[in-house]
Amino acid sequence: MSFIANAALRAIPGLFVLNSGIGKIGMPAEASAGIQQAAASGVPALAKLPADKFGSMLGWAETAVGAALLLPAVPNRVAGAGLATFGAGLLTMYFNNDNYTEEDGIRPSDEGISLAKDSWLVAIGLGLMFGGKNKKRKGGKN
Image (cartoon, rainbow, N blue to C red):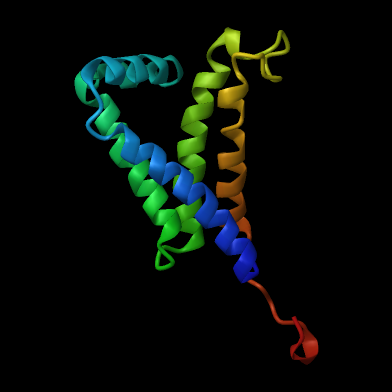
């Protein structure tokens, strides 16, 4: 993968996820409970976590994913796995709420557009995981 492609796949979503995570750390209990309720629609086990602390816990997790993407020392496969897993978790909310999809259960409704876009996070994560390295061609040319 070229340096520019690698940087774009890591820096742009990394900054976005990092910013989102930092914004959730220390959020008010009411907002935290609202985020937890939405998240539990996709992953019911999340309802068992403390509602007043859920937003901060999610914020720290997002911050870790964003930081992993931004730190060059973290291998693409590791950073990509974190991003793909995070994005897949977000998509569970999308697919488990009938209001977010059209009747076919796939295409997003107007309400679901904001979550359907998280499929891009999964795609970027998979690209980082399986993108491989540049291989030199015969004769030393790339």
